[in-house]
Each structure stands twice: as C-alpha cells, then as structure tokens.
Image 1: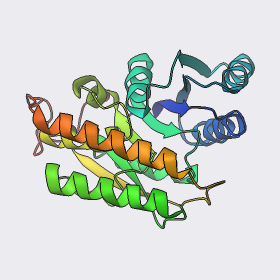
Image 2: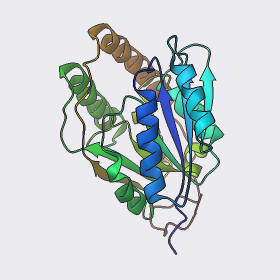
Image 3: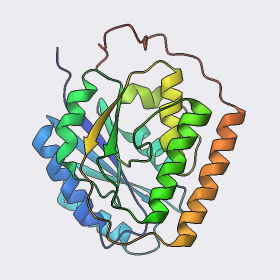
Length: 248
C-alpha cells in the first residue's frame, strides 16, 4: 500500500535575506505539486541581516510555513535536529536556502522513499566553485574510508527521511558533517538507504575561502568526535531483509 505523501520540509537560512523568499517559494510550489500535505519549517540560524524579517513575512502570508530561530549560528546539524523535532508529518525533507538544485526531482525522491527509509539526493553534475567541490570530495572520502558509507554525493543539501529515522539517530554534529553522520548511523542501525538524481543550478556566488576553511575545520572536529564514540543500538524494526511497512 503506497505511503501517504505528507512532508515536513526543514530549510536552514543564515544571513540569506536576498534569497530566502525565493527559495521558500520554490520549495512551497514544488511540494504543493507532488504531496498530499506539507509544511515548511524555516530555521533562522542566528542571522544578523534581515532574514528573520523576511521569514516572518513569509509565515504571515502562507499557513504552511512556520519558523524556529536560533539566537546565534549553531550550524546545519543543529538546524536539522531542531527542525526535525518540530516536524509534524511522516516524511522529513532536508534542504537549505542556499541549495542550488532543481526541486523538480522531488517526485522521484518520493517514489524512492516507498522502498527506503532515507533517500539521498545527488547532483548529476557539479557547478560549484573549487572550494565547494573540494569540500564535497572530502566529505565523500570521509564517509567511505572511515564509516564505510558509499554515496555519490554525501554533501548534497537535499535529503528525504522517514521521520522515525531522525527520531532514532542522535544528531551530534554542529556543522556540515551531519550529512555523513546521519547516513553512517542510519546504515549501522539497519535502515534502507536509496539515492535519487537532482539537476543542479549554477551558484549565485562562490563561497568565501575563509568560510570554506571554517566549515572544513568544523567537519574534521565533528568527524573525530563521532569516530571516538561511534556506538549505536540497532533498531529492531529496521531489518534489511524485511519489507518496508512503517509509514512514519
């Protein structure tokens, strides 16, 4: 029996006043076209520009939108953790205001989640600058070499989860290593992992070198911390040889 296509989208925004409205509108339109019910949780990660005001205006205009605000930037991991905790619907979509992908691929991800517990988006080609491409390569190597997780594009900002996965996986990373953390822990716990192609869009601007260095440092700290204490109890409902029946 097909599962109900009801999606809570969690979108991180940090100092994104110039693009958060367009990103949230595109996400809303994409979800309206392929789901039975949806909501969008906009997580303002300690923005110091006008992002909070833009988000507030969006939430007043659209009943499906609501917001969580961090007083200071806590990172992508904290945004996913807090957004998932606030999610009300059975499926959770992870994305960012800066995600440069074509959301026309969401129907394929929803098809894949019928057979899996989480679906990783992967970009069919990379249009980022060298800084982002290097970071993505490093993330993929960390995932494969240290944690035995092989993903085409581990750092892709768009992922779809059954909500039970995020309830069972303890998110400890602050920054972008959360991409690898959730996949690695879900793999150990026995959850089915699928992948789905997404077409990329050109970035509006290349990330600043100092920002890339800061993110890389946080990724390495999070990876080391996770490696030192990696231990999880398997989920007895997530047997790999059992049919996917849970609708949460």
